[in-house]
Image (tube, rainbow, N blue to C red):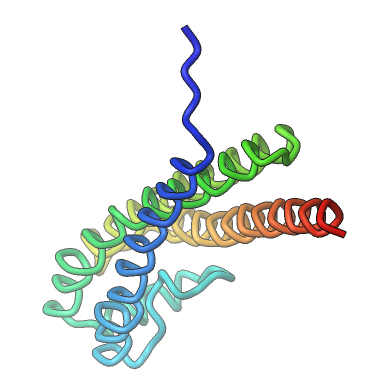
Length: 181
């Protein structure tokens, strides 16, 4: 039995997941991440798309102090455990909506894989951050490298997923304009 969800349902899902994701994102950017930056005087790991060295990781964790490290683990990380799923669900719903509007399924599949992989990379980044904070002051260079690579991969995959969505919207818009012209 093959059940398909109507196009409107994908649009509603994208809007709901998108609003929730935006709420979490804003809470992190203007709340927890801003507070972490204020405490340490340094940009948090989550805001370093180009990664970081062991020296920079140690500097941030040291500058946070014990209360800042606790704050990162108990405030920022829990929010960032919800956000990747909401972001992936938003992008996948948008892609499904675009697919139901005639955008090629190959583009939808590629965007879906990028979206899911970006979420996984975000979770790996979070795990790396937790490992670094919990093992401080003896952070392994491998833990820093793994967390840094996860940050870079997350950023690249998220950018790729968003670009696929933008391309899909462009294709959809072009077809609509051409239909009405």
